[in-house]
Length: 602
Image 1 (cartoon, rainbow, N blue to C red):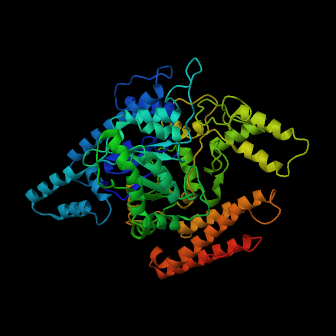
Image 2 (cartoon, helix red, strand yellow):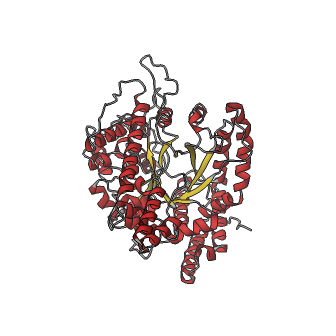
Image 3 (tube, rainbow, N blue to C red):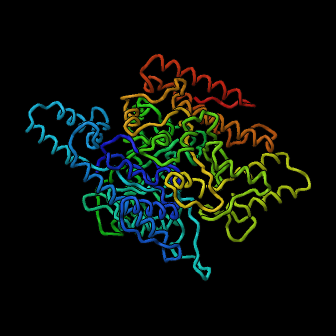
């Protein structure tokens, strides 16, 4: 089903988009639910059943396959609620303030449906207008209810005898829960890279097979940061007869949550490679997919299924989104962090929402706080950070580890533990302090240990507070992971205001000094480079590592690329001058960082 909108709301944290479809799907807007935290999912199902007077039968964590069953029941409930909302919306009168009017008013300007709606409003003949309204009602479609699995969150689970449960890992159970749901025209978004165990399990689900006409009721979407990753993961799945229907390209650093920095490749050159190799990618995947699906199901397809290319990460204006769509053929842009300031679309508690509104550039940092060891964008001074600092000050560093979704470290124990846990931090600090001579970067090593923070609980507590759900004992702090773009959005907005901003009907950014999102990403990479160089200074005596040299050269090539397409980036001469000034400043800064001559790109 074709989306009526040109944007989507990506997954944010564990809780921030947990019920976004209930808030926005009836308006044709697609959003993504995280299905990592089944305890939160069960609490949310209970909350909505109570609120809407629906029957609720709890699923205890003592029951068999409870994690998958909780996810299935929640997704089924969300779909039912959305279907009921759409049915009610379709029956409303076309009058000011009604949801049916809002549906069409929020559509992109110039779209066929919006034009038809405006024509209906101007029609004087009552009979003709009635016919137009009936036709418009039939065109209303809900936004997709998509889900996300972060492939790195895949703890193995064991039965009472200590034997690993077959297909019982966290990610596998979440996948099974989604596949068992009644969702249709839906996608499962995999992020954080290739997980062989999970991807092998995918092969068992016939729900992912195309119909004879090449359509899918459940689709696979892969979130990637470069073309190489798309090719590798796409081929891996194609060999199993699984088609990737969308590659969701995300900026390596100009994004919220976990950040996967590239080797200095900037978003523009990455998208150019996707554009240049679209047909090549499709053909390469189909060459593996066609024989695999024929052997698996007997289905014979003679041409590749469509592949959608979307992008997200730091987009903040309609001009930026239009550039991506025009220059690279992008079909949809992801708007994440700005929607955190829109309670009609996301779930953020009142205190944290005010902190987001007040946050400046220095308040959102690329931290080491994730127990996964992956860089993590993070809002400072939250209640979650204060809770962590209070424990450190009291000599009790680390968090109680109750959910255990991020246990992965076996440095000190046979059974994996979380690096944010009390147990790990106590052992790691003892090891660090036990060295006869302090390491030259002792302070840095210690800080990295103490930075680690419980995300399993911190990232759900905003919803817990917003809906007054049961709080886990001793852990009430909220952690939130907005992208750097959040610093330029400074007030709470309605859903209509946000969509109007996305489509250029209004402007909600009051900070005139907001840099272009491509310049912002470049600045983030320069800061990341400085940090890497500082860390390597302890170990490198002579010049730079080969990895950093490659990183620098890729940045140089990216800067040169942007200089060559500035007229495509913006057709406003004043904005072109501002962009080039920022680009030259970045180039000079990069050159100033080099301790030795690094070859310029040809």
